[in-house]
Length: 182
Image 1 (tube, rainbow, N blue to C red):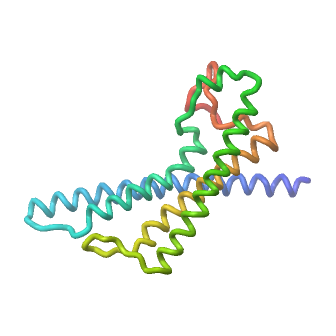
Image 2 (image 1 turned 135 degrees about the vertical axis):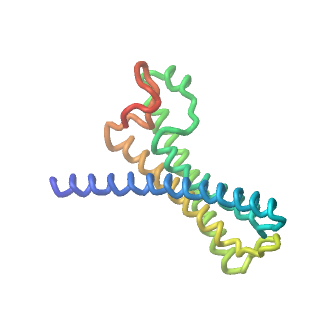
Image 3 (image 1 turned 180 degrees about the vertical axis):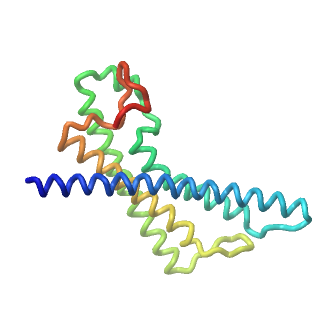
């Protein structure tokens, strides 16, 4: 029994580290956008052009968004209808389970098609229509990885809701702050 509990604690630490890594990767993509914008500005001041910079900034923005989804969900930083949850009272847990189940199934559906679409983009040799002719599987790969991470996070929270006394994603209750304890 102690071995199973230790294994579950190790899995919990691993998942939390993966969600944090997703947030760090998202921040890295945002910094890359900043770098691209600064490079474009400097290039324009000197009469030059950075080919494909706006395309790459778009890829970075999409990648940052997809990697940030799981991090935001795990931290309770997503948009939710708190008014509805406070009105539900004792039925709140069932609403949380239902919402997590719908989210998990939906995220899994999108993750499957994101991975499949990236594979086919690679297999067919899709390239961007811009001057840079970037193979599209490259930016799609990070978006697919972020979507898979989001699906894992939804299933993780759903299983914790069902199997343990986990209260759901940081609910705003009387006296709790949105940045309260996990």
